Length: 123
Image (cartoon, rainbow, N blue to C red; front, side, top):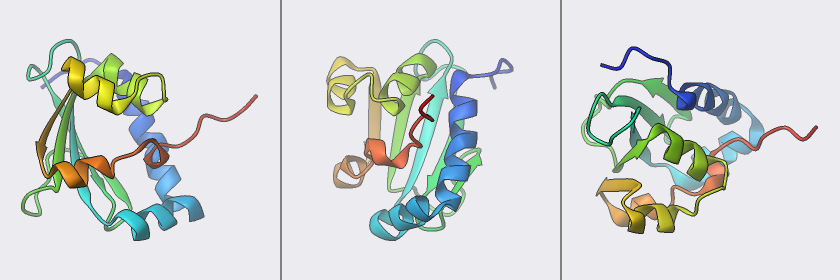
């Protein structure tokens, strides 16, 4: 298990707050799927840290999904996940370039859109 902090850790903390908001609760009702996201510091598949984004319950937890199988599993390098989450990289392009790997339902994966991520505060 990776011991260094990932840039993504902070984003997942912000997602927890986002899902507690009214906009987040609407997303939970609309999507209703469970995603596992594996984040690797440098190379996909090595020292990955897993997070579960549960859009049935509106929760984000660290660790692998334990309630059966998630609807889709994504694997990213830390930097690429930040780019996709902040809108700097299109998810389809990330997938085609191999910057994002998907296991599970592709139709569920297609519902994993940028509105799931909190918008950065405007200064």
